[in-house]
Length: 212
Image 1: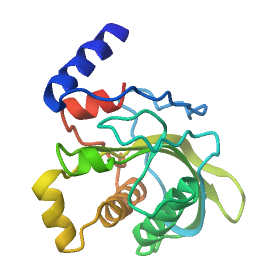
Image 2: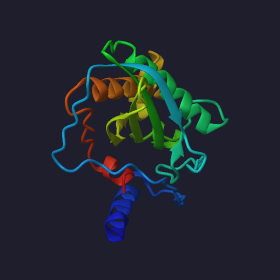
Image 3: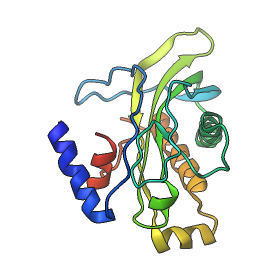
Image 4: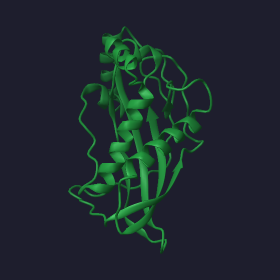
């Protein structure tokens, strides 16, 4: 694995004329994923409560390199508390994504952000990259307190625009924040409203490098 990552980093260096030193990242204990082939079928639900947690143990990186380390990389808001900014994005996105659900069982969502790695300024205005996002979710019946189904760790990556494409997107209001919020709203909509839930897209080499 270390050799694979070295090879990929060398490849990235050739593409973007070398990166700065890489920060380390911390990781919280994750929910165990379902076994291969597992399909979770949820009851018809309405979401009455959303609790988003962004652990303070997640390391923030403000390094302006192509692929900085850290668990949280976010430049779509002014400098400030990045944990709170990420929480606000999830709060907005999940509220939007669940407001059309009108099922029988009233549930609460417990959400724990595990990774929120958007683009730095350098990547945004040159090569682009991947918005690498992972969160864990648990669903509770608000009437009984019982957990519904299995807790699930969800990877929700999104292609990050770069260069002229990023500039054009921003000119029509599609900032990183808008695109990620819309994306996460659709992710939770699919996760709660469809059989099998959200399936992370395959976005190629940069996605693989981000997730090692």
